[in-house]
Image (cartoon, rainbow, N blue to C red; front, side, top):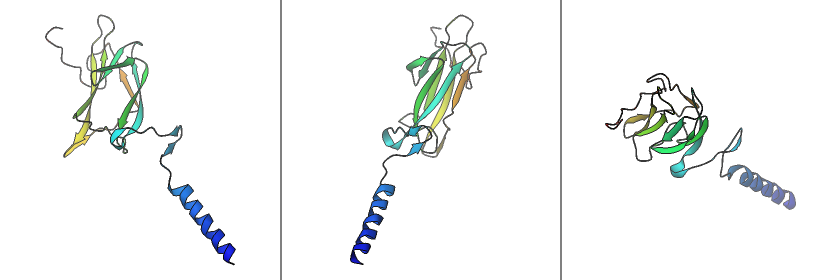
Length: 142
């Protein structure tokens, strides 16, 4: 009787340790990548009307289309505010006649909303303002 009670207690502890102490979540593709401030990695497919368009995220070059951009956001799928009220993705022209495009997302803050992180962004380089966001204002040198 004493052995059965100890064995039951041991099995209960093992079940609790094995089931309740996981340090990562899993999704269909495996474990979820985590970032600073409790953020999670979201993968965003970025495409353009012509392959090879230069893409910048928050003024940093991230590659050429098509590409998959990793964005660290909040658990609810929204952009995280890492100190800036906006997250900007720009597509820069590769040939004459193309128009720069930008997509601006709100990252939230005190009493201000944040945008959902999209799964896909498409930039049509031939049409002004069609890059799912407003075209950036040209600088005086352009």
